Every structure is written in C-alpha cells, then in structure tokens.
Image (cartoon, rainbow, N blue to C red; front, top):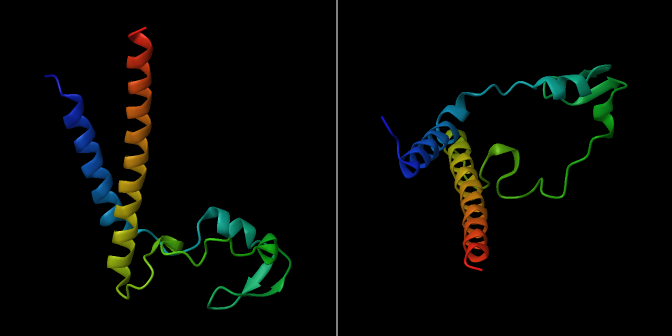
Length: 117
C-alpha cells in the first residue's frame, strides 16, 4: 500500500496537534532532571523557592521573554490552565509547521530555478 506524501504530512500534523493540545496537559508539573540537578545542594520551601544551601539555580535569572504571551507553556490572559496549555501547544505546532513548510517551499523553488538553467 502506498501512502501519498500529503496524507502522511497531514496525519503527522494532526498527531502533533493532538499531542500538543491534549496530551501535553497530562505532563508532570514536577521538576525535570535538569531542574533537579540545578537545585542539588540547596533547600527549598513548598513553593519551590530556594531557602538555603548553595547550588547552580541561585544564579538563574528570567530571560527576556519570560513575560511573553506564551511563557511557561501557557497562554497569558487565559485563566483555565488546561485551555491555556492547549492553545500555546497548538499555536506552537502551527508556527513550527508554517516555518518548516516555508523553508521547504523556498528550497524546492530554488532547486526548480537551478534545474531550468
């Protein structure tokens, strides 16, 4: 059975949208391995703030886009956490897909132009 490229891309896009919009909401909110490693040597309180010790995380600072509309895997201004995460995930997939499709289109167009010469 042969699958057309367009169908394969569409299926992949739909799967990515499903994962970003629904499944991502079930990811753990606990610190991942990198967060845990940077906190080694420090003590933290219930809110996760460093209260003592010495570790790499003490030197951490917010980046320039930390106040942006999609910071921390959420959409600013939406009170519902599930919906906020779903929207930011879906928009992220769409933006990345659009950039990738644009790059492929430009490369294909360039290849067609060089083939004509």
